[in-house]
Image 1 (cartoon, one colour):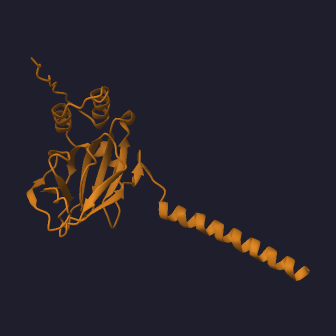
Image 2 (cartoon, rainbow, N blue to C red):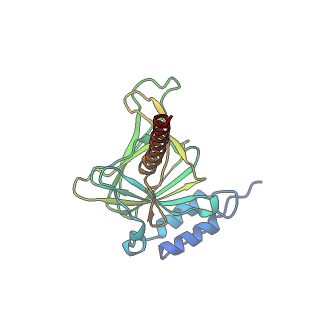
Length: 225
């Protein structure tokens, strides 16, 4: 007869302690969802502990990496400016744990679209998560959208994804159309991630300068002939 999984109630007094216990819980190959949820729930938000990771952007919510969990999970802080929200999205067969550290966040749960991906997506439920409240989702539960509906207050949330993933699918609520997108970090370990667009433009600029140099050089050689 199969024995029930024993769940130990861990408690984290600080964010640092939370990370240490998470490393212990994810040392094996299986994830005990109840244990991780209880641990996340036990931590009381302290801005002095997570403020160094909270990087906001004027136009969109940000994903800020806190810990890579030895490849077993990604722990990150998401920062939501006034009115910011995510697309409807899946979690690439990963576990997703979320805890509100500051403000309120609205979570809307959706059914998966039909196989043809045609037609408006069906809402399953919606709720408002307040400071220190937790939530859990995986792809068998459905898809969700997270929003800071306040136009006067920012929000901050702590997220754990296991296993980590670099891409996910977003969905159009009106049509169910799916699109694969790549996930990026706004900052890592408290340091701003270099802007990909800026670095890309810099590379293009360097190549353009090289082409101009060789064009001028070749042209000058022609004049000498």
